Length: 360
Ligand SMILES: Cc1cc2nc3c(=O)[nH]c(=O)nc-3n(C[C@H](O)[C@H](O)[C@H](O)COP(=O)(O)OP(=O)(O)OC[C@H]3O[C@@H](n4cnc5c(N)ncnc54)[C@H](O)[C@@H]3O)c2cc1C
Ligand code: FES
Image (cartoon, rainbow, N blue to C red; front, side, top):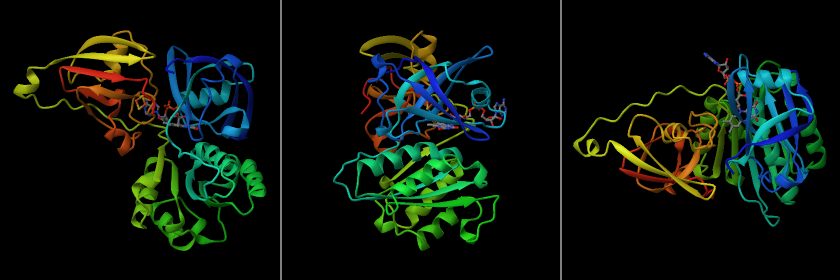
């Protein structure tokens, strides 16, 4: 599960001037490992110059497509995305970790649901996978998408979305919002903000009719839309959000104030359960995260962003307690079940056991 596998690139397509869609060839012996659910992402790894670089990219293909595809948008000054857009070609090999993530809901052919999605820029990537998979798997369900871009020329998957609209005439509604291209209806101009989302909910969709809302894009858009949905009456549990942080918000761990009780437990004995094996090491509390301490102890613990965004380092605390600094990835129900991000977790008890094998 936590291992990278070398996958050959079968095809690279220029989606827009600054986005490529990369399709991987999955050999028969790895098919089970690379089975995915709509909305999941891959961690890609490459050596760029002297650096071992890992980044997350959402799968854009539908589960029924029989293809494993991601879309990589060039981020100005970005290390991996610029390298990928400039370099990757069919026949190249990339290190790829099996699919992860929980940006989806279970599907059932008997469902008669109405789903809503807000996407901005490359945030369309998992949303496309979710829409395609859902409309194919649930013949009576429908989708409404609000999709924000600068202009038509930068719309990723424009043709694929148009084709989907042709196939699902009555079940898919798409509204484009453009920040640098004037459209006739004023509401469709600008960026997707809380205010704009609130207006859409007032005039275009009834929150009462929506079963689940998906949001994917930058943090300000994600928070704004989520607030608008909740203020319109949608329960937080019906909102699924995925943050696409091109630049991870910088955070420095603040050590806890020392207390007599904590002074007695400055060291923690950590046991890591991973791929069926249990390995232990000792670490100093409050000094480094569980992930950093584990990597330093020689464990091949999985990670990508190290910033609390991608959830690649997600694991379950089986014994003991940890403090988590920042969390942009886990939902409340996951935290309630004991899941943490190891890159953001600092032990607070003398013994901690974490399990990477409980995917749930
Ligand atoms: C779950 C998840 C799914 C994702 N899915 C997708 C997807 O489907 N498609 C997609 O395109 N992206 C996706 N992303 C974002 C992606 O993982 C990368 O973050 C993105 O491609 C940028 O990576 P990079 O290496 O090019 O940029 P980085 O090198 O990480 O740089 C990011 C930003 O920081 C700035 N920066 C870098 N170094 C410095 C410095 N020293 N000082 C100041 N600024 C600096 C850069 O200019 C840039 O603006 C996803 C992210 C997550 C967490
Ligand atoms: S490595 Fe990305 S959340 Fe921890």
